[in-house]
Image 1 (cartoon, rainbow, N blue to C red):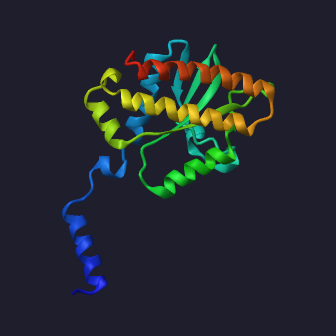
Image 2: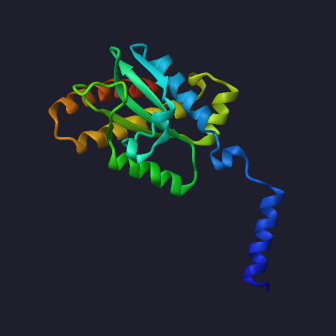
Image 3: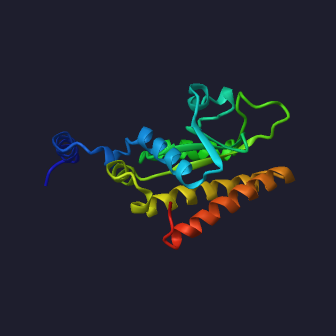
Length: 193
């Protein structure tokens, strides 16, 4: 019977010989962001979407805790901020979830004072799903991932709805929820763009 230290050394040596793959450690962030953006472009023709600016992506609390990777627009107006991750690190996931809890709504530099804040959506994807999508970029072949994107957005919107008392916020969230829930139902029926 060996010492615990010897067990740790063997474990470290084994990891060095067989390092985890990108799929195992969730190192597919940029690809995941592009995948979600492409999903929105393919499935929601009335929605425009763009990558976040460096300032929006930074996530510094003094800038309002934005930390978004993409921004969706409806009728030319910002409507939803998306934070997208494939991280498997529980500390990273907890940090992103806490940011969502602390700041379920956000404001962008482009917005006027009279513009309403927009809800934030946190999209968790499995790195392996993203890796498979990159190999074969057709959402019809990846309905589980498409469903995961929508379910993440829907849960985030439902959370934001619980966090606001403003009736106008509720109306805007309900419009988004109806659109995303309708698409999720289509996916569940096997109909995907």
